[in-house]
Amino acid sequence: MFQLILDRNGTVNSNWIKRLSDGASIPFDFNNTDYQQFKKDIQNGVVLNDASGNPITGSDLTTFIGTLP
Amino acid sequence: MSQTGYSKVQIYSSSTATNTPSASNLTNDTNGSELAINITDGKLFYKDNGGTVQVIASKASNIGNFSNTINVPNTFGFKNRIINGQMSIDQRASGASFTPSTTTAYGTCDRWAIAVSQNSKLTAQQTPSATETNYAGRVVAGFQNYLAITSSSAYSISSSDNFNIQQWIEGFNAADLQWGTSSAQTITLSFWVYSSLTGTFGGALQNYSSNRSYPFSYSIPVASTWTQISIVITGDTTGTWGKTNSGGIGVIFGLGVGSTYSGSAGAWAGSNYSSATGATSVVGTNGATFYLTGVQFEKGTQATSFDYRPYGTELALCQRYYTRILYPTFAGCDVANLQAYATSGVFGKVVDLPVQMRAIPTCGYSSLAHFAPSSANSATQSVFTAISLTNSTPNQIGIGAASGSSGLVAGNASVLVTASTSAWFDASVEL
Image: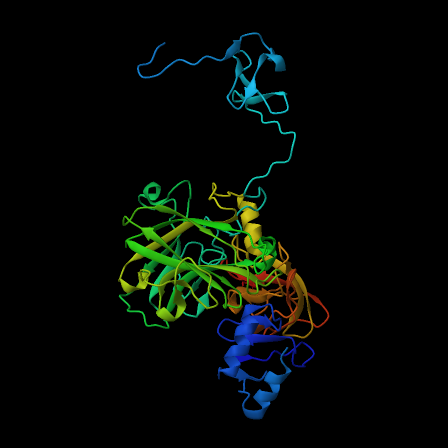
């Protein structure tokens, strides 16, 4: 499972994602294999939460995936 | 002194130091040429086709002098493209056993990934420790460590199963081999293996897109005995091979590979192969062992002596892909000077990484309970409930946001301290 990250100013970080299994922060960098795996995982149904911990589903998830580099 | 069955042949000889035969004293003819020896200087002479007297051999000296360039099959610098081939560095587990549970996992010797298609079929471990019984009998050829695989069951692999040990050589470190071109260089892969099983084992080289593979096979003829293997592989003249900071060449050792990922040994193929057809399955026998060390991947057609590098150099090479920053000395160790942005959170750089990493790393920490901020009066506050390491780059780990503590004053400095001797931060950007 993954979760969006809130920056200290309260906005959602658009360059990193949190992996909930170990708390690691993963950058949106195509050369990072954890990021490549994250993209595969959420396209294969692994849960992605918003910054409040609620699952992102349906068109919201599709839209989010479309914004990924 | 005469020797039965041999006839004596004499050559010109001198015992005068520095005495050299003149050109007129030596013949050089296809029907027979003369040699001369200076037994004081320890030099043997002949006259070449141009009529010049040349030294053809001289006695051994501790000093080698060369007037021209030296051209040998292997380069002297970074001869071995494999990093941690002697399995001496294990930042993640420090020798503890590791059970891989994801498709491709790093959890034992640095730079070596264990790929499994089924969970709980094997364990991996850097071993032995110098304190173990029969330590000297378990290592080989000066290597102090090896990567040990132990099968956890008698699992019959299916066609799509794939268990293997692998290391990806970064493209920057393989670009000079010119694979994917007509100038592709030949390489030699050598390694030491030990197994409780005997038979034909397999592995493969592969490009990062997994659409070019070279399966290889080798024999372990005697069980529980170290065997050195050397395999010469002609470079691939086709396909796409990474030449920058992404994957270059994958070196794979099969531990149980189904038919989908197995191919004919000894030839390049446009397929995703991890091993050779018919290779022994280590995971097929409960308790079976497979040990690996001294892995060397070098340019040329001969396996040469292992490229021992200083420990600090080998560690630095590993840290381009994974770094663990430890704070083992005492709890309460000052980690970083940060700034509070709220009563509950801090931000700022935690640590400069010892080596610039391959790309922006994934960053993690041992446990939220292992770190706590202090407030202006030096009182240590409650631990965080969340830390986001979004201030990280290939050169540093940094906290972008943290929450859940209390008693901090926005705008004030806050020192992050450890609450455990097991505390660590890490940065990972493996291939």
